[in-house]
Image 1: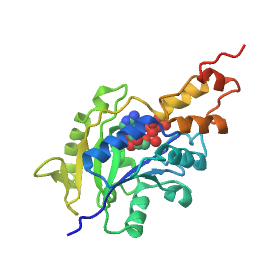
Image 2: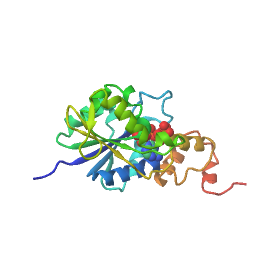
Image 3: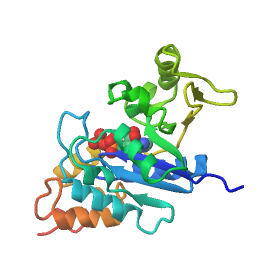
Image 4: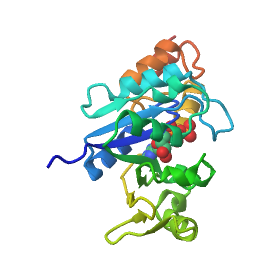
Length: 239
Ligand code: ATP
């Protein structure tokens, strides 16, 4: 019997996409045995105090450039085409309509996951996909690891009888039997915030973002770079 196609979804602002995203995606795809991993840039992220710096179209294009040539990785313009605030619950419901029968995994970093109760229709989210919570390095080692996630599961989601501990590893969604697993990844301590702030100071972001994304940022003059920075990024110092 054919098994269901296993698809991962990585949503985000991707302002811009960076190697931290790609490495996390690579490791999660390997750990979960995904057939395909779809990056979905948001139109307007609902939970952020500031609007993204780059337009939705630029963020979408950078994501496309970042995954070009990696079989199995793709980018969906679903949220950008829908416009307005991008709610994951709507995206997952739309994907279920568009691509029924897939075994869908929603990938999310620990930082984003610990905030999930603030997302629209958050309890319903868990009935629409399996979840893989990925470790994410950062200034707070507690938040970067899975200890905080384990506590969150016990104190919030298990107490509310949304999840129960799974027989093997992770958790089982009570209503649907869908799974939530922790996926530790040796990921990179890179954030889009870091990339934007380096660019704002005309400093190099080479090897933090894919080369094609760097070229696009320079070509489109994104993130407040001033003229002359191109030479500086290349290590060439103009007179
Ligand atoms: P910003 O710095 O602007 O907040 P970001 O780098 O966190 O951006 P997002 O687009 O918000 O990037 O992230 C999308 C998803 O990717 C989130 O689930 C986030 O946790 C995850 N993620 C981002 N960077 C990393 C990283 N370096 N390692 C692991 N996961 C990451």
